[in-house]
Image 1 (cartoon, protein in one colour):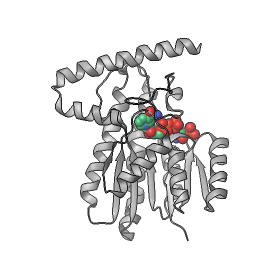
Image 2 (cartoon, helix red, strand yellow):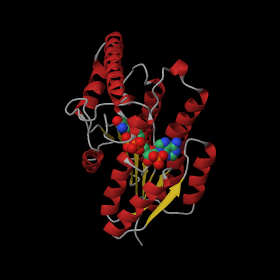
Image 3 (tube, protein in one colour):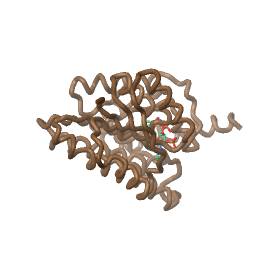
Image 4 (cartoon, protein in one colour):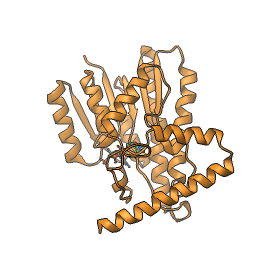
Amino acid sequence: MKNTALITGATSGLGLSYAKYFASAGYDLILTGRRREIIQKNAETLQKRYHIKAEVLIVELSDPNGISQLLSFIRDRDIHVLVNNAGFGLKPFFADTPQEDIEKMLYLQILCVTQLTHCVLKGMLQRHDGIIINISSDGAFAVMPHNVLYSSTKLYILNFTEGLHTELVGTGVHVQAVCPGFIDSHFHENAGMHMDKNKKGLFGFRQPDDIVADAMKDFRKGKVVSIPDAGAKLIRFMGRFMPRKAFYKMSASFSAGVIKKKANTSASHK
Ligand SMILES: NC(=O)c1ccc[n+]([C@@H]2O[C@H](COP(=O)([O-])OP(=O)(O)OC[C@H]3O[C@@H](n4cnc5c(N)ncnc54)[C@H](OP(=O)(O)O)[C@@H]3O)[C@@H](O)[C@H]2O)c1
């Protein structure tokens, strides 16, 4: 029997790239998402290409019922790899964010990640074997307007993963937090942000397959935190070493630049 990798949010972007990666390594897959036709097609393609079994669970993970549904689905299953990837962005200022969106983000990016990890960990510890990959973001290092709630959840994911690592040393269970910069995926469109994805280089967009390849290279080297972009590394460096006031100022002006560019790009999309 093959080992199983559970990947949340495998409809597109990074989650689909992780699905390809683990399918090509011979894992059976459990994939979650909401866009039924697309994820079903992904699963069929991966099954045929890699001769593995790919199951799909259509589930909304930003509410407690959906999280319970997924936990019940996997309760008696051996999960050898968990990739906590499903996530979304929000663009309003925090004060303007509807209560409903706040709850959705906290359920998906904090509660779901925590409970899924807790659920699979017991079996992994019994088997002395397991991989948990949690998708954080360069947002975890950033402090900027229009990013407050999102980046706070990503900081939680980063800290949660590093803390877990310290508890799991020597158990055979390995964890990693991945902190990418801009990814060429559906993320920005879904958040109502129209950005120029042709931008390359520092703070440019990268392909999800390349990010997964870099993060897994880091994983094999034993890196608990993978930062697969130069821009993300720079943000972390500045956040650590710049005086806080200067960091706030620089972050706000960077954000203002991105917002202005977004506005221009949105205008040219109309
Ligand atoms: N894009 C970036 O620039 C960037 C940068 C740093 C980190 N990240 C992180 O990378 C991860 C993957 O994002 P991506 O860029 O690959 O975006 P994406 O293409 O939009 O993929 C997001 C995935 O998450 C699923 N998802 C979103 N909200 C969900 C919900 N409420 N319930 C269940 N599933 C949900 C989506 O499912 P459906 O589409 O089927 O609904 C989709 O499969 C996220 O955690 C994101 O925060 C992204």
